Image (cartoon, rainbow, N blue to C red; front, side, top):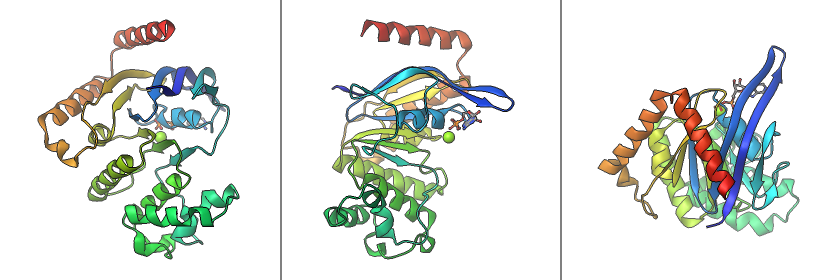
Length: 272
Ligand SMILES: Nc1ncnc2c1ncn2[C@@H]1O[C@H](COP(=O)(O)OP(=O)(O)O)[C@@H](O)[C@H]1O
Ligand SMILES: [Mg+2]
């Protein structure tokens, strides 16, 4: 499978009043077409920064990000984005929120209306299209945000802790909904999450980032076949993978191991 995104030795240094803050340090990895990759790491380690750079919403300080043979230099409409807060427009209905990207790009609304209703039905909000965001629960609002991110059928969907503000039961429901969406509309996905179980359930690969200035220290393949049955969470293999990842995160990865991974990653990249 060909590469969709190639992140090559990417660093980010924020200039702040109290001096420069190195948020990401020489992160390198690739994501293939159609692959779903999760990124795990402690708070403040630079995950959002990395995603913003991949989305073209934040410049890289060093390194390069390539999307399908073109350098990422700014935002583009073929990337769907979902954040922790649903950030819906409070004064317009659910259906108008879902169709908002269509309006922004001045495309004909009628070409997308049927798809908007289909997406709302898929996430269980068929009868809520005329509601206002204030009339919905947090989980329902986040489902609307997912529909909005999918309305233009972007080949790449990036999600930054999309379910972190939800209660555990709603979160499990959203995981199953996302698994279902992926089965029906295969695309490339990047998910930033604090949940190891969520990462293992949904992903083809899981990357772990260290504390700041952070880089990618481990890259694990999740071998479960698709379509995936959510009941894989009960399997021994699922729990083994979760424990393995937990071990990597908790050990924080000793500096020497970190350096070893970096030189290994650099060696792989230079031979490609
Ligand atoms: N716009 C910014 N200006 C200055 N520092 C920032 C900015 N955004 C993030 N940072 C800093 O960069 C580091 C990484 O932040 P972030 O990418 O949000 O981490 P994460 O998403 O992993 O919690 C943090 O120390 C944060 O304070
Ligand atoms: Mg973040």
